Length: 120
Image 1 (cartoon, helix red, strand yellow):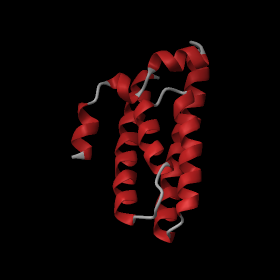
Image 2 (cartoon, rainbow, N blue to C red):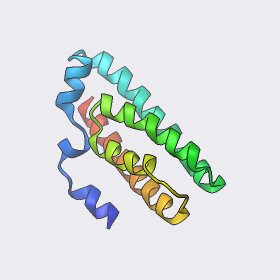
Image 3 (cartoon, rainbow, N blue to C red):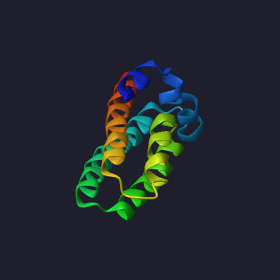
Image 4 (cartoon, rainbow, N blue to C red):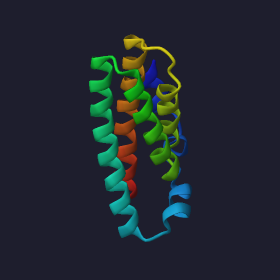
């Protein structure tokens, strides 16, 4: 169900190109460099979130999610922001729920990477 939900959302729901241009300007090279850093941060964050879920570290999960909210908001990654807000708001450790949310984040990261690659 989560995968289907991701595949049916419009591009703007996933990645707000206008917000990106407002925040970063229209210099393609600058945008490319910053988005490469953002994609690398997402890759590392997903890996760390997996580790934190395996170790049962809810505080670390919430801290990483809070960091990702800031990153996602600043460059217009709307859906990623929505997903990580749910991780950040998680009050109790529930591995099943956290793994489901991580799976949605992974799928959304793949979608966003494709959109960014096509955009650049």
